Amino acid sequence: MPGNARGDRLTIGELSELSGVKVPTIHHYRKLGLLPDLVRVDAHRFGYDTSHLEALRLIRLLRERRGLSLKRIGEVLPGLIASEEAFRPEMWDDLLTEPLERDDAGRVREALVAEARRAFNDKGFGAVSVEELCEAVGVAKGTFYRFFGSKQEVFLAAVASVADVVGAAAASGDRRRSGWFDEAVGPYVPLLLEASVRALHGDTDAASATAQVIDRLVAVASPRRPRDKRGAGAGPDPTAGRRRLANAVQQQIEAGIRSVLALRRALPTQRA
Image (cartoon, rainbow, N blue to C red; front, side, top):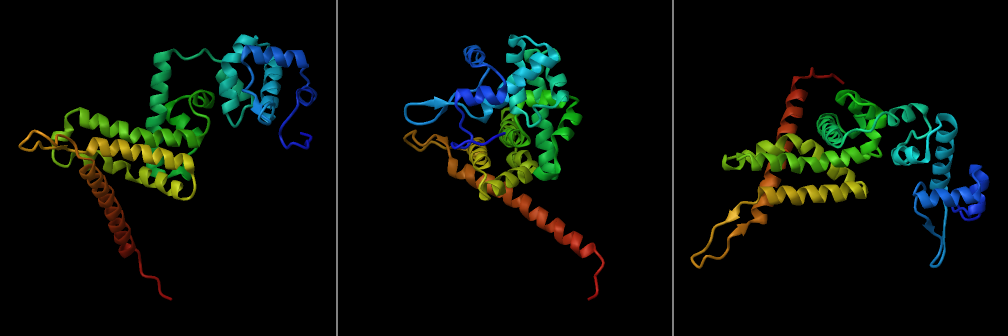
């Protein structure tokens, strides 16, 4: 795409020239809600950028190659724009299938998050692909991109879901058993640690997700304070909750270290 003096900011004339779409048609698409929101140029002006150019190109392709109505394009365009493979015809095929019923959509998203939680926890972020998650759940990649814009997005959803799993264990009555929290959160410590490491490396989204899930886990883990003689003091004890979460994480780290040391001892000694 030709550059301009304002980086990726475009006037409507430039947008029309680059996209091949006439200015009145661009205004029409905006009124229909097919284009992203305008971007602020300065305190008093708004304009366009490359996201509008991509949307216009997709609209044109879908109209010319698939003969879609603007209404149908409006239904599938958000999923395509969120995808990293928006211009692949295979993505169009996936998204142009009959829309999922609301209940089915909820189950598919839940299944994708559950599989992501398992896969990221067992293998780590780098070893998991979107294709793998879709294959395990039995959905096409286009269906995946209806719910998540990227692998990073489903990773963050998987991290957040740990609190849901532990909360469900607490609600089922498990919290009356000694050690229930360690059993519930322990299996997901690798996932929580990876999110924390990504946060330490500057991933602000991972930092936010980690902070939120920790707050939720502390709330679930917090026992209620006993009432004093005057009847005061009842309520959750977050300090005890944080201590319980820290102990659960520490136990898993120590278990991992012991496993590594045992594996090292089992390996044959290499001579220099």
